[in-house]
Amino acid sequence: MKLIYPAIFMPCIEKDGYTVTFPDLPGCVSEGDNLIDAIEMGTDAASGWILLELEEGNSIPAASEFTELEVPTGSFVNLLVLDMDTYSEKYGEKTVRKNITLPAWLNTFGEKNNVNFSKILQDALLDMSKKTSVR
Image (cartoon, rainbow, N blue to C red; front, side):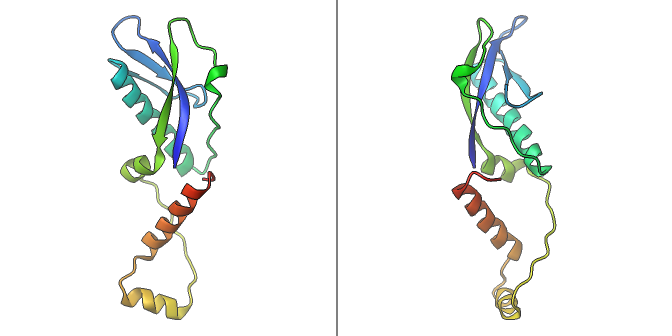
């Protein structure tokens, strides 16, 4: 799942670089020594914020319309793309155990063919999540 959130980039006063804030993600703040670093750090911070919300079972906020944001003088808005599938594969740690019920013959087939039932279910659910915006 890919998400787009507006980020406000404010030049740092005491040093080179930018502070990055996200109007839709309370408390999510990052900074970088230059614009490229600020974009990368902001993307990482926002992705981590979203992943934590998802892992805790919370809904994630909708992104604001970037044209409607109030931006401090000297600052600017940039849209950041968050690739949550890639981020969660790399940093997601929380797992939950689910019991499922299968017909005996299907279980036997899976076991004989060394099927990883958890992986099959995860892949199917990830595929479904890509086709819908529900998570």
